[in-house]
Length: 68
Image 1 (cartoon, rainbow, N blue to C red):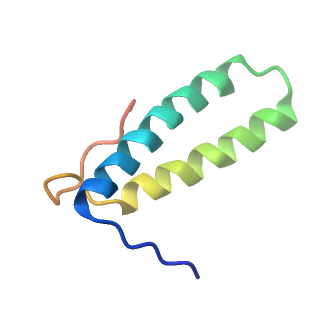
Image 2: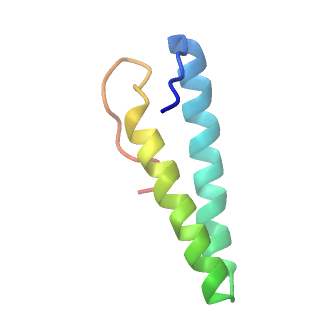
């Protein structure tokens, strides 16, 4: 198991980056014609959502999922 320790500021930056990437990934899923590639992208989307759920929000509270 890999552990990553971040300052609150760095966690906020990571949360922002992941949120932006997740939004872009959702657009890619919608535009993909290949069923196999779409499934791969959906797996990546679920992984990113699980990471975002585990990251603390800036005020230490859980926020609604971006783009939901």
